View 1 (tube, helix red, strand yellow):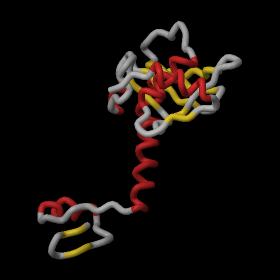
View 2 (tube, rainbow, N blue to C red):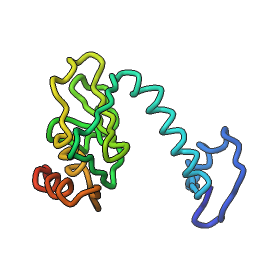
View 3 (spheres, rainbow, N blue to C red):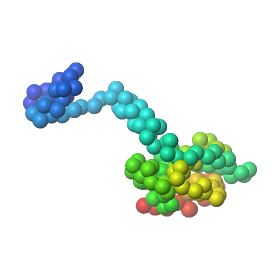
Length: 153
């Protein structure tokens, strides 16, 4: 923990954290802490949200390819791809995760109906709509088509 006047303290017993925060100390997280929090968040998603979803493997038809973006897993609704994690509880939520140019995972809430069709272009539109910095794909046509159909927020 760090205090603006008193400096830094390490190895704080858990029962002292709240009293120190009340005295102006703040919790400082380092690089080693980041990995621990990422693992905790992954575990929470695995235990809390993923069991509520039904998972499907989607194979791209011959001549079609999945793209990837700077958000490797995207969840949300029709045109809302920046939904907060708690929306994974919603009955209409969908999740996509392209794994390769020919294979993607698609998930939907267990209480919802199985989607009639899941197309390569729809998954690519979702991935492209969620991307903030970059989109990549195995062909120029796959990336161009995804960019042309993406929804801007």
